Image (cartoon, rainbow, N blue to C red; front, side, top):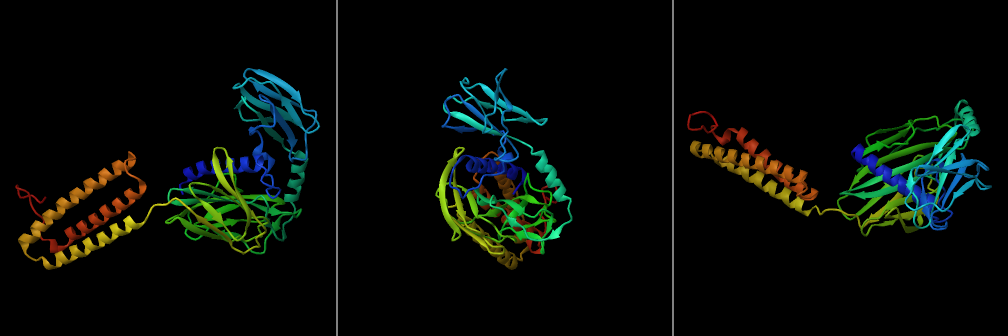
Length: 415
């Protein structure tokens, strides 16, 4: 997987996950993500009057509302101010539709700003501004400096497996939270490492992941010790798809407290697993995702996911092309072995050189058509294999003594 394409896909996936888990009440089984991931992101709702914006101000956690604190809302070139209520919410009403808005608050010297967004013409907007809980951060720093002890970690309930179909591949993302509930750093008995599913290519560490995470080929390692709280692991990979069905098996070195799978639905995509208890299709941000949950998965036990209805290209044309190439190669070898006449050899060499030039021209034309979008990826791959195989045969024949002396032009110079 190219890193730039992965980064773009990751941004979309994370925004979908944030909207899905932060704005859609699937059930109590889906836990809320870290509030800091949702800070400043406007969310359209229909439970507020038209032209209304509600800004919730919290410090660190959802349970820690900041009460009686001023919040500014920039409306174009003007600024409105409102104080938060007992629930930490400041509300702004009667905003002109389409006007550019941005919420701002300063808490303990920390400036918090939302994304800029237009005032809605229907319904309202809810958003959160999340300030740093400095006391909690100080406690965490003290705990992190304590001597490491030997212990266990788990993959917390907010860990997600995210699947996005792509062209002849699945993009698989693991958004994991390694949770250490102790008050001191923990070293696990065995190194924390796991391999991506069989066949995975281009595995990479994604933005937002802990610096403790590293990747070597398909193997992911997370170096200890693990500080108290959560260690974020975000990795992604490509899994090639050659048919409409695929089974994924994945083992983790720690207990997964709750299996949660989110798959972007394309076409007739279906997801099944003996470890999934419930699932539903959820539309969000203009796409539909399959949201599925299951119970606890013990360390070392494989998570098995079966997908069907995957988009893919048939491999039959490629197989036919390769078979034809094999026949051509065999025929070429036979022809070279029976041709010994010098005149015939020179004629054959001249034919091979003409064939070489035509294959080169066809290859250049194919590359130009691909860049201009005139040929689909499947046809491009098959045709390129045919041309490369043909060139390989021609060069092999030209290099053989059986092909005879190199022909000369009219001036007697070797062609």
